[in-house]
Length: 178
Image (cartoon, rainbow, N blue to C red; front, side, top):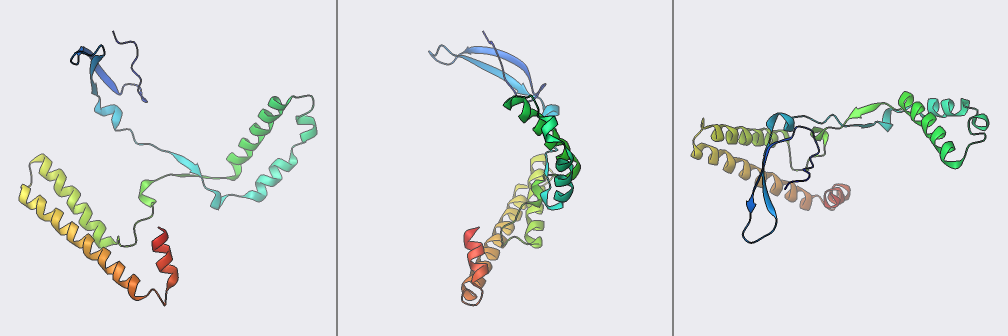
């Protein structure tokens, strides 16, 4: 008998059924469906943007609070909660938030706009092939072209790096470190 099924989102799993045991095991198999509508929710994760923060205002806001009166007669836990509340209020006013996005991540040094376009074409060709709109040979041609272009870009970066290592050590160590 199934006691509990845990998911990280409500409505993510449906049609849960217990099947028989696998072989001679005393454990039961569980069959379920992952619902598409619940999967397609995009995360809107935000973080604090300290580059645009106004630390002078933060210092001023926290300096205006009469801490002796605010913390008078409180224990360590209560004092911490009062301080934390004031700090979070000041943080909301002084430190803006920014959306975290995977698109702003650092790209490898060999990745340029032309290669990004080629990779996008490859992904589209794959999607079209899965839908039956493009033949397998055409999809494979896109894959081979993208792979060849990536190999050439990597080789060119390595060649330039090896040629300019004496004159431009910073770029060499930056790429090695990454």
